[in-house]
Amino acid sequence: MQSSRVRAVVRWFTNRYVAYCPSRRVRHAWYRRFIALGPAANVMMGLHLRKLADIAIGARSNINPDCLLDSRGGAITIGADVDIAPQVNIWTLEHDPADADFATKGGPVVIEDFVWIGNRAIILPGVTLGRGCVVASGAVVTKSVPPWTIVGGVPARPIGIRPERQNPRKPYRPFFI
Image 1 (cartoon, rainbow, N blue to C red):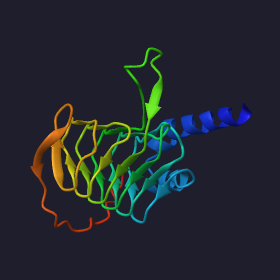
Image 2 (image 1 turned 90 degrees about the vertical axis):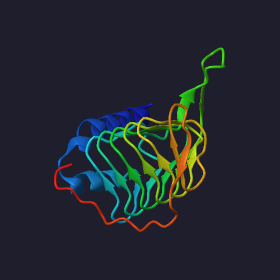
Image 3 (image 1 turned 30 degrees about the horizontal axis):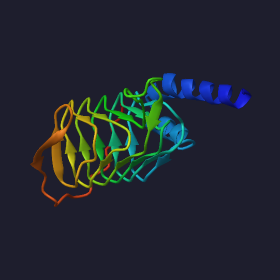
Image 4 (image 1 turned 120 degrees about the vertical axis):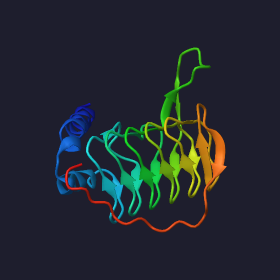
């Protein structure tokens, strides 16, 4: 009982204060205690974590302001050179609308290398975003996306193909974000 209260307070402190600390170094030092941050990975201000565990962010990946990562239903694995725009929600736990008791169900989310997720997109549990795919702004991804595919809409459907030749990102280090 006591450890669950301590975890809740630490999560509250992380989401309320650490997430809005203007120093990237301080934020990253704190986040590294709970999540795996790859070399030159960048997490901007306002990240909301529903669980302080089971999250891995690859090298040179960038998470923009005000994103939500929920790893309560499974791990979130983010590959290298991924760009996640502001206000993206990644869920690993949801309610089952077909269940009479509205039970929860979940699954891990895997985001492979060179993926680009647009502003306010939503990724639901059990989804794998294949290497180099693009999720358009506002899309709701309910099913896995093949590599190098561009998806958009609600629910997300293929709308194009992305070139497979992608270069590694240059590390992004904004002063105040």
